[in-house]
Image (cartoon, rainbow, N blue to C red; front, side, top):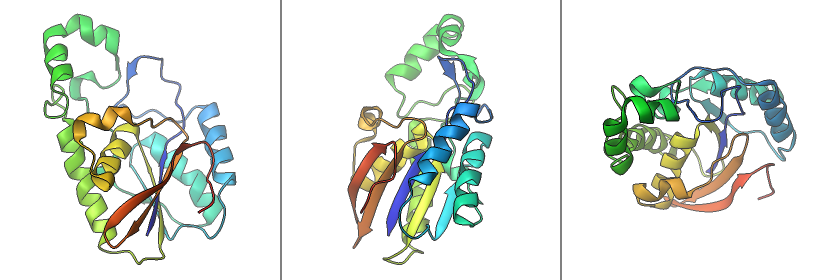
Length: 201
């Protein structure tokens, strides 16, 4: 199985916003960037197209759906990290208003939930369940495209590549970028990462 992971395009969120589960749409640039990425696809279309059910991911998936004439499958397990009461607020405001809790979360973000939210370990659990179901139900020659978010893509890469969770932030996952993994005999290998266009096999 080939697994292609795409981060959604940009939104009009202000820089420094804790986006999380705040359900913002793609910006005009976000649409354009994803259209350009989709146009670079080579070869047969993916057999399956999955996407987070947040709006920015769904709109991204619809661009691929139109290009490939396939129906996107929404899956909440691919959502971004839920930052709870911090969703949609600026990090500078969070640090000022909730400094002690923010510092504790920053020091322990892998296992510490955001207030009324989730930890990265929670994201690992839900994305791991999605990945396990996927590898158990696809054939060797299948190609699967998943549209997700920085947090959920990092979690999936930790699973696939056996990376320790506290190294997840070392992986660059930019908006409207793609990575491709090949899974054979239960082992994943990287074909490319954080690419601005789809590359050949």
